[in-house]
Image 1 (cartoon, rainbow, N blue to C red):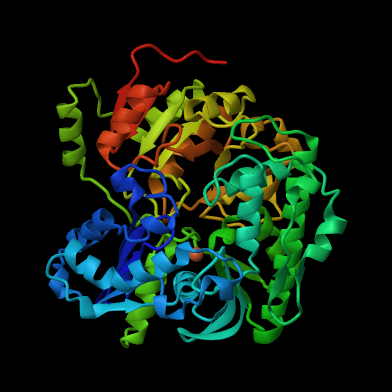
Image 2 (cartoon, rainbow, N blue to C red; image 1 turned 45 degrees about the horizontal axis):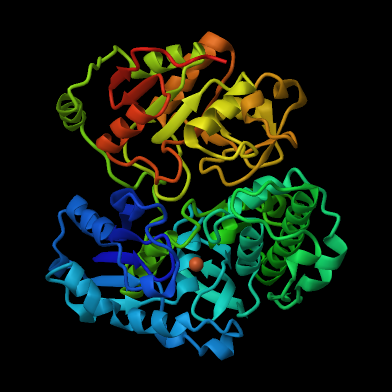
Length: 548
Ligand SMILES: [Fe+2]
């Protein structure tokens, strides 16, 4: 059984392919089109399909469009209500509905040979739910979808028993934790439905002194749902334009909303635990990328484990929709094998790219040792290995690496990436060494979706990755699943005593993550990076970058 999943309606268009119950490929359109987030989440862009990523998924598996058993589209226009009924009064919904209804014909055009009758519409939040509950390693689990919006809802609470979803609660619009956080993102001068993680970072600089007022306006209702009243954020701090400097009041507002969000999410998690008694909570939806909230849910809800879909935003609905439809067609689906579901290249193919670029390169005995050498010398390394990641985080396949022992490297990395200086960078750590250094969050933590406390005695040793509040958003590296990355960090530890390297995504300002070897060469060519480690090869910058 071959099922292609498609996310197209709002943002982060993506495609995923499930063959005989197994996830064989998944990729975001932005990695192919080189346009960040694929498109803007505007009504008139709802027709745009992830044509390039969908075609690649099929090519990767050697499948022709006419051989597909089904295409799963992660939005069901029949479930939409009028703009008045949602209470959002969003006239764009009329256009979204029309384009979604036409998606089968559009898809048949984009994938010649596809029978439009094979396109199934999947409720948006059922697709998110499946991307968590059916992709997680624990087959039975409780599930929370924490989103901005779907057809008429913003949330779903349920459980998976033997692969079947039972929906227990859903919150209808206009109440939406995701949209409320997007409003704040916009109010603080950032890009809505894109920059929410900047608000989370800003929150760590503030005090939640507006919590009292917000507790009335944002609250769980005790029945699995919640209320979000309209909030006039100007009552707390003035609206900011793009790149305008923020003040203590802005940080305090971010801290207050963040804290209130965490409290309500903990309430929702407790409710779904009461209903299900499951040990594992799985989560998806854009709000589930809030790693500070995720750690709090793990710490304060009765669940023993919390598993979050690494592509928790809308991109992940392509995967979830495909898993859901495969199961509906009678397939027993398997958990996702990891996040490295995108494009990869053979050594020969990579070498041909290097030859084409007419650039000096070497093939060291061990690329892991060569990289560790440069990192130990405080160089910056562009690391391009294996298949690219599905979801917004670099997880050791398309990464920018640095020494974590120098405070100045935070500024240096943010300069390379053209990012705000208050943004933290994250550590990759050897799995077996992680408990010595990090606590509170879960270990293992392979997808960087939780925050951990950095042990007091380690904070000065790894200042680049220790945030102002003494936390770090870690990725643990398991030698079984990531042997090359593990070898590279081990080689770094032998030289420096630190089982940790700085890891941030391989891209420059405003661009999607590097995906193919040419992107890697372009990124290396334009950014102050000392070494490009691409497959077994390395390319050195002739003049080393200034070391702080
Ligand atoms: Fe969504």
